[in-house]
Structure formats: C-alpha cells, structure tokens
Image (cartoon, rainbow, N blue to C red; front, side, top):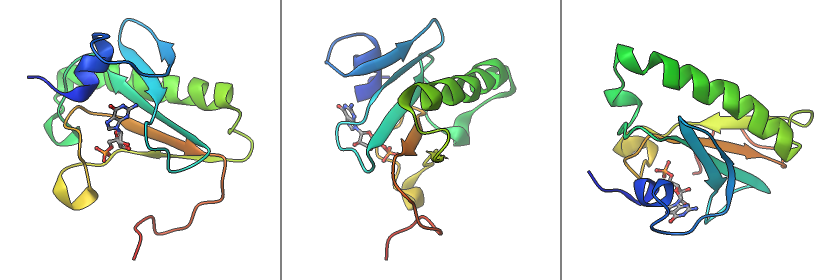
Length: 115
Ligand code: 5GP
C-alpha cells in the first residue's frame, strides 16, 4: 500500500530526516505545530495503532525508546514534550502509516483538542 510516509522512507520524496535505523525513520513535520515537531515512523507499513498486532511489539517498543533519544537530541527533554499518536478519523489521523508526533519547545494545553 502506498502512502506519503512510505515514499519518504523510500526517498521518493524529500524530508528533513533527523534519525534513521533499520526499524524506523524520524523527520521534521512539514507543517510544524510547535518549535519541535518531529514524526517518528516504523519502516514496516503499519496503518495505525488500531491495526497493530502482537508481532509488532518489538518495533513499537523500539519507537518509544527512540522517541526518548530524539527528544533529547532536539533539546526538549528538560522543558518537556508530548508524544501523540492520532488514530482514525475522530483523532484527525490524515496519513495512514503509523507515526508518533514528538512535540516540544512550547507550553501545551490540556486537553489537547482545539475548540
Ligand atoms: P496525522 O494528522 O495523520 O496525525 O499527522 C500527519 C502529519 O504529517 C501532519 O502533521 C502533517 O503536517 C504531516 N505531513 C503530511 N505530509 C507530509 C510530508 O509530505 N512531509 C512531512 N515532513 N510531513 C508531512
């Protein structure tokens, strides 16, 4: 299945890549909602959290460990940051390739929805 993040992983379209290894890729969001807004995606084409399987445990754990490192590298650990995984329509998910938003560099409100 084709999607824009798979095209970024395959270098068919450009992105500002900040981290890569055999399981995942991280790149800056093209429409940042905070001073730091990085998307962390598995190279495996998982559609969303709603479709993960037990066999995805390793990659999901890997993503969280890498999220910690990427946030540290981006300099937002002390100030704080938020990890967001939008899932299906009500959340606003627009790209159907699992991704973790790493957001930081500003004070964020709670609850997270606008209006
Ligand atoms: P979602 O709404 O699915 O949780 O998040 C999708 C995110 O992908 C949005 O924040 C959007 O700005 C970002 N995005 C969409 N297309 C591209 C692209 O081509 N390049 C990059 N770097 N980010 C993208």
